Image (cartoon, rainbow, N blue to C red):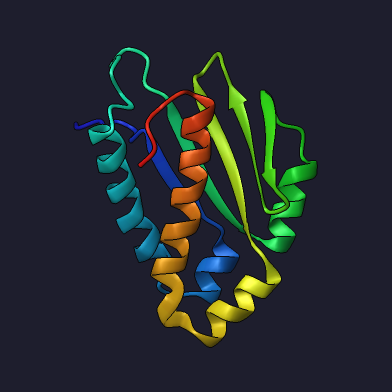
Length: 139
């Protein structure tokens, strides 16, 4: 039996958003591979025994608010009104919650072809904010 290792960066999309935007699942899978490669080449994983894990969790505005009031372990960082993260030092893992706001959902619904570029830019910006916290090179 093969055991698959968890990638350092994983992207999780809420069921609600996957239903609303049928391409979001495939876009997030592609970006997950792209970001893992970019961070590898940027030298984020020098110590293979101590790999820093990042879970990017994309939620609707309502789902985001529910996650925000839920009790999480770790140090909280509020990057903006629509992005916050919890860093668990013991696990060397960050869970980062990202809202697709109501206005962003309206834009993406009316112009779905911009979805891949929009999600790419939003997640890359967030990864670079997390990188700065951990003194890593930007991607």
